Image 1: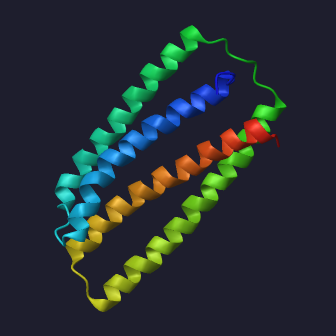
Image 2: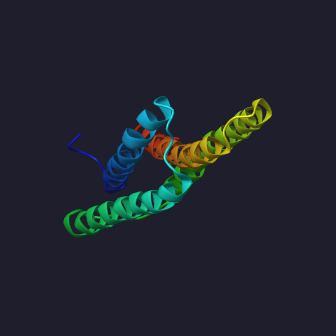
Length: 149
């Protein structure tokens, strides 16, 4: 693990920041849904924004530090191909998750679930989907850099 390239270190830093944000979101939201008392939709918007700012600050600090300490490799065709293939994987995960979420929310609407629960679940599910899609994108990039394309 000590012979990582600049891009691999960059990806690992992004994954750590993303997982920290996911933990902060899901450690509070999932127990609330299990208990049957979802967080109020008005409370979720500033919460999600705070998570976004936290992940942004961590990534910014990490990338600035990495840029000063590590030698950056030149970007070539291989990097572009890896980015394209990894992005495709992330978009497949996001698209499939959004279709599944739409079906799930439609079924909840048909059976008459509480609208506040529906909205809160939808907000948390969309943010979780974005986290999972970005994670699959970053993990795909790591695999392609290690295994090759």
